[in-house]
Image (cartoon, rainbow, N blue to C red; front, top):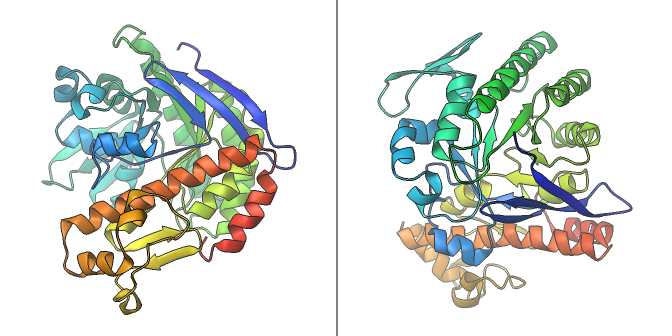
Length: 378
């Protein structure tokens, strides 16, 4: 694997928050970074041009969904995922592990992989570490994720250890498979990230991280969190993990979380985030603001001529009222999802920009206090 060009450019003196830069052949990524989730090669309700206008530097796509439809071989034949979806900036693909393990009634775990039935048509499939890497490499993702077993919460110590051990065996297989493809499949570089597991058990988290580092990856992800555990436990596991991971490698917290989670976990040393919350919640009428959230369907917004958030400068807040957005949502207009999604993604990406500015200005801890004082969700 060619070395990933990642550099820590600044460090907060009172927390573990840090600024960094990842250099890829599809552009630079400033960290901390939030990656909008484009599950099937699209961030629902958004065009790629709108995502670029919002300042998204990288998006995430899903191996499981793209493998089932339209298929990774078709994507490869059509020039790779960047070309297929017309996205010129970096792409990270998750391994599909979380999606496979979330369909409990439709899958079976074996030592060499997972058999499952498609949620689309019930057809039978088998996803192994080797297969997961093959799919991602063939699609041309800049960042490829090792195949892992995501343990549910709650899970007892022995079950969690079993999943952690299997994750480590699969991590080694993922790396061997990734290396076997060489560096000439695409004109751009690809890098492999390992994923740590261990549930809420510090002993297992620490052991998994140490052994994962021994295997060696371009970056490291913290997996298996935000699956129902209490927030305080999640933050403890994040802090333990970030502290133990190599300083010179990017740290990626998978599937997290609320705006407050971003702030809290940057303070604990995390560099990369993804989450479906801004897009999924937008479609359900849940809108993020600088003072918490609002549920736009509520009757109190029927005559509210103000913007979603008076502090927000996105085009939705500058042009549309809460009353109109409520009308669109209740009328089930497509425009409701489009405008709500645009605002929520702007809020997330703007929060990350504020975080970076606060670290660069050496006032991050003040920013954390101010942000938490305004928010009523977390």
